[in-house]
Length: 260
Image (cartoon, rainbow, N blue to C red; front, side, top):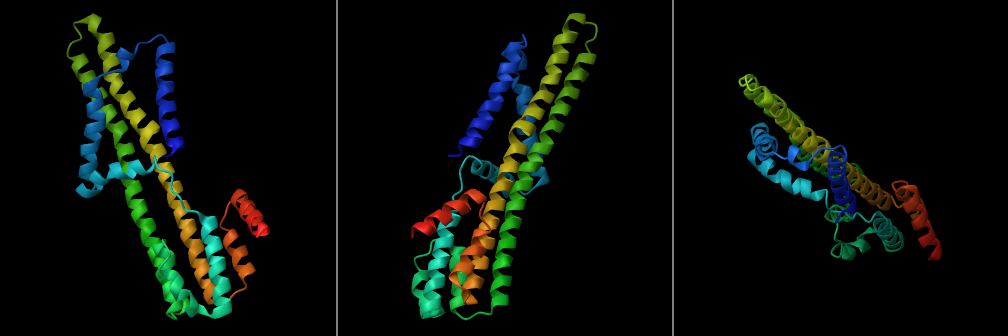
């Protein structure tokens, strides 16, 4: 479970409640089920119009990912690549064939399989980069659906406000109802802004971070596979791969290597 997402969403909602109560308002003034339904459900149906049905249904699974913490374990990948490099330099590339079945990472397994089969380095790079590119395209498509939901929500909020203002203007004879009706009309804009700025936009931002981390990991694997195939020194391989790590992770891995 991703605590950052939980704390972020909960904290943002808590600050809204705090601001409402400590500004002299009541929660009842900001609760209107028809307005909320128009913004959330209405914008979701608009999302179905703007995308495929499967993508619109899948948006919930995409949002769910933001509440999970992906584990890429780049340090373990580097250590495994170093072990493969040492074995390949000592016994030859074919000696790695027995190691492939134990690999959980299908992307790494595919690259190493191509290497063991004697595939040209250029072809290996092209195939692996193609798979990386397609993964990024799939992620971008899912991210765009969440982005679109965030973009549609304020528009539905404004639509609800316009609907409320129309109803209010038709009853101007009742002076006492103008203030409450105006407040109710603006609640829909409030919901639209809240859905977009507290939920959808942050969700997309986190999904892009995840995409960047996974892309970085796969680029590192490509570099590792090609370095092993080229027969490069294991220390050179390690230096190349550690360049993909952030400074903290790099120092931790260097300390671990020094222990060994």
